[in-house]
Image (cartoon, rainbow, N blue to C red; front, side, top):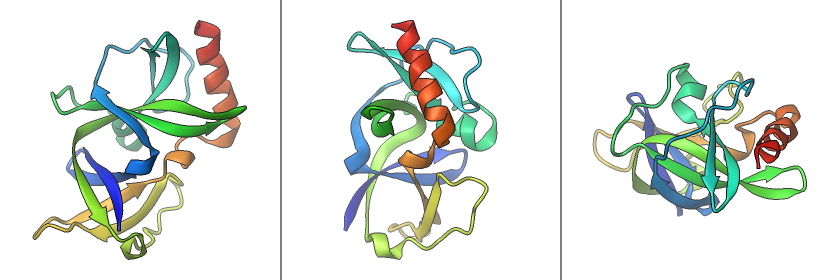
Length: 155
């Protein structure tokens, strides 16, 4: 059984492997990053360094995450040129966890969004489906270096 952080995009529920999450924080004010790839909400100051932030709702639906008390900034471990870096993710209703056996995650059949992983029934009665987010697939490889270089230029 693996532990996942659970959150929502609109009415749908999603999961991120808890082992990839370094920290969950209240959503701070973000600085816009002009010319950023789709879904990139901006940058945030983290311990004196600028971190890129991806809005998961914006990436998935084209609309920014709702401004709620439960909308959080997830700091996740992300592969970047030169080694692993932190990446910020804006996630709505990021207040729960779920334990799932990863073998119960069935392929979703979605190929247009490679960052969308398998689906599984929610462990609660009437809970619908949960879908995994593949953190390492959120930003296409060709844009990773550009995004992290742009952030470093702000420092």
